[in-house]
Image (spheres, helix red, strand yellow):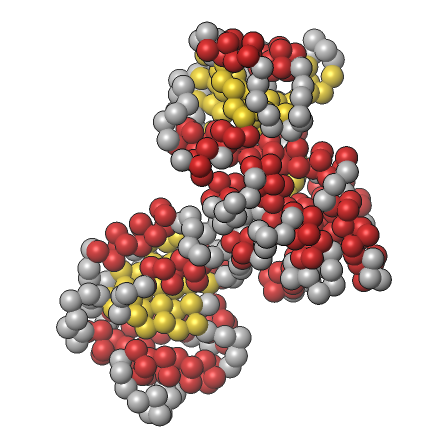
Length: 475
């Protein structure tokens, strides 16, 4: 099932429609849906599709030769190309004499695998582009999961391929709404729980059986030794890093509540001067992120490190600490801690804040906010009047127009609505320098008639329920 990625697909189609030579670079973390996007794009188009493997150059050339011969309707029994120069020269010859009305699409998937076994490949491909492909009616797609390699050896200024690409796409996991499109028939409340657990990685979401309950799916996939996602984070770390144990320890520390480099280093038993390397590498994959309060009035020293992907946040919060029990066969017993109970509800409530923030971003892009927000985030700091630390769940600002939107998120069946609004308005006063302020209350349930009446009176207040967050799915 192909969902989401409409803008990425549109960009590829627009480039293809231009004709002539086009080179698209597509990269992103494993499981994020790169191949699915490419498959959807090439549907019905003349295509040479090759996926490199972690094999020797000779073995990859044999696989490439078979794919090339098949694409051009030649006997696959022909001898395999001896070098990448021979292989690409053959493709250049074919595309330069291409007479079909539609351009050929040449997909080189997992390009880093082939280039790592033959470091000369980027230079050979650069020569093929400059002396052949550039004059042809063809579209070249280079795709890879190794983000560091793709950014350095394909897009980087020191790469032989630098300046050849005509477009690039870095695929990220789905946001909460596109993730929900993969789970038809699931209730809004469970959609939040699923997003808080699986995040927006399409492959992970595709493993969910909507005929089962949330608890059944999570128990089977996360808390069973044979579960597909039980060891997924560790497998990804092994694929991406030479020393996965150190990265795993850093993530464990963040999962246990450490948010500063010094506290993380202390929990791991690592030199504080060394932890930065681990944090930057994990952040480059989108697994963690460095957050600073948005809205002014707080120094950058309040920055914190936290998970940037709900899947990793959930795994290191609820699965990692119970690995020993799961290995002993007690997975189903500990699964209840990760699917119900106060700790789980608190965790989902925190992830609900991120869902609300994503909704605000979508609304701003669609032009449905009172102003066009330029930055989105959260705020935390000191309330000098109450003499205590406080925070604001959702913040959106346009510093040029001096407009501010703040939001409070309540993942409860009931709460003091008027009190929540007073608190939100009071906290908004801590963010100075804005001429106009707007307020949003997010609730798991419907609001009272009195609060609805207040919002309808033009008080700068908007009320958003769980149903409103997913209204686009039901339209």
